[in-house]
Image 1 (cartoon, rainbow, N blue to C red):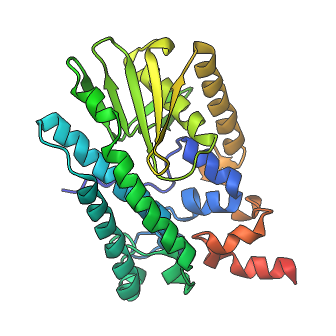
Image 2 (image 1 turned 180 degrees about the vertical axis):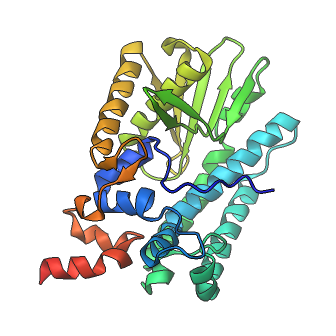
Length: 315
């Protein structure tokens, strides 16, 4: 029996990515978290069904990141079972297999995607009939190779092999409360050393950006709240696999309180866009303005829903 329970409105929650989506474009935020709700249903209104379909679009950078994370997850499982780790060539081969699979699906299954968007992988460019530039393909190829090498060469594997090291979780879907809101925090890997140091690992396949540090700080707050760990016993590791570099982050209690305050401020801001905060009913979509940076719109998954309004704004 399915555990699915239909909800008239989506559940309220918060995450760092949710806030980032809103900051990028409030209208994108609306479609992603509200306009697409129940769009998977057979009798869904046209706009909700379209928003849900567009929400399922992906791009090569996301596919690469997901493939690398899956390989990392399999390597953690290998460590747990005492198996040998794969070579960089094997990891790269698996990453490229996933990339080819998504490319082929996007090329061959466009009609099926319209019917079953949750079952078919579809690249943004194929859906919108856009050309994927040669420089993008070259960058993805370079990152696939560099990320595979960086993942296999990561010092994390020797750290996990040390006596007394214990894996706590990896890619585990979980929440913790801040105020009355469930907050999503999913560290790529969390483990504890024999010396009671808790280490958060966040694998990255892109460039270094400041937001990544704030994301890991939220993970540290999660570790503290979920496992009762003092701030000084938590170490964050941003593993930039594509760059072959690592950034270590330590935290004070004041810094974790700042992360909590940031989350609470963001929740209050996002809730101001709700007609009914108790049931999490959003205001009309017109209350969620389009981004001012219109040059990014053609690269947004929800571009199809905004095209007419965008055309009117420049006429």
